[in-house]
Length: 445
Image (cartoon, rainbow, N blue to C red; front, side, top):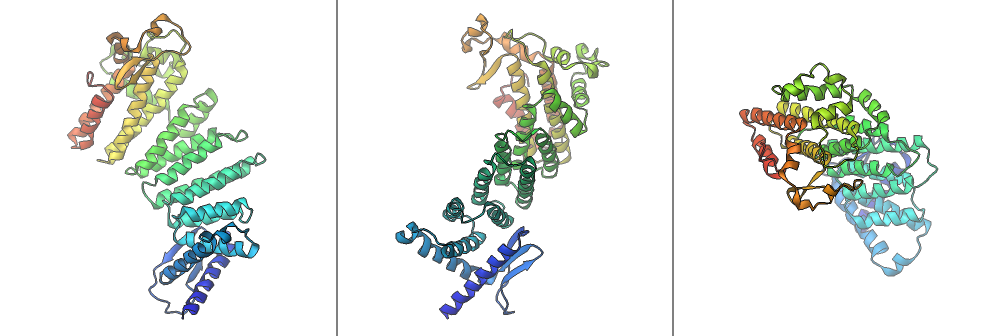
């Protein structure tokens, strides 16, 4: 009876291997709930590029594969140190494939596959297909994502890769991450894998990332608007915003504005005018704000009074404000439409923090140990900048607090918090406390 059971398991393993080897388009694997083999047919199911295994045999197959691996390839020193022949390597590959499909959270087995790839016993492209099957069933399997990153890193090290091949590889990875994120909410593993891929592509000199940054920015906006409770995608959204902000040169800015199909300046000006209705200094320029240059608009909103005499890139700063205020407006709309979602308020904290930090940087200040201190300019040798950081005076803080852009932000947040409090949103009060005690704005809030 025991021999018959082992023979059946061997046949199941071979059937699975046949499907894996003959169908290169497989994209999904799962366990199909079946109590017993009442049909007296193979439990390996193959339909429309999907692979399945009936649940009644899973325990027997897994125990057999795991025992074989531990007894013959891992535990015995002589066996482990001996070189693998073609027959042994094929059997080892089959056992590893089936075991990892059933239980992929075993780093020891993934390391064994790494060793086989380094010995040219397994192909990298086939290994990518295996991890795709694993992630179709276990979308949060960090071990599979880690192994996939190892494979991609090895593939991308080839300097002769064509840009079209890299683009196809990137599209496949993004598609895989999207499926994994869709199947499992709060899937930080898939979003982190997406970020890792973009960071890795930065090292490739013959591959332009500008369009990819814009594409991912737009994708993250669509995704977050449909998954408002999933903060993992908002975490990726923040990463995309940082990538856009770091590349705000003239060429990129033109492409960016054309792609999002939204007038960022108009959105920014609307926020300014609504927040400062009683400020005649700004309202006198109502008809001309849309025509202002970036330099002139920043001078109006922040003035020229700075701790440093170095020239500041006002064009870049104005574009940064336009991107961040547009994100603030978008966040406000989502909070008003999808009420009482904590992840939206956490994302709002990030936006407000970035805006405040940008103002501090402009005025040569920074937060250190919860207090504002002067930030020594690396380019300027002014005697004023050589003062000890603890000697910051209230005069320096007033530069920030009296600026028009700071008043706009505070007025906008006050009004929004009041509206949300009237709607019994408990997170509005928490946001107010964050502004007071974390950002240190208790004096002005």
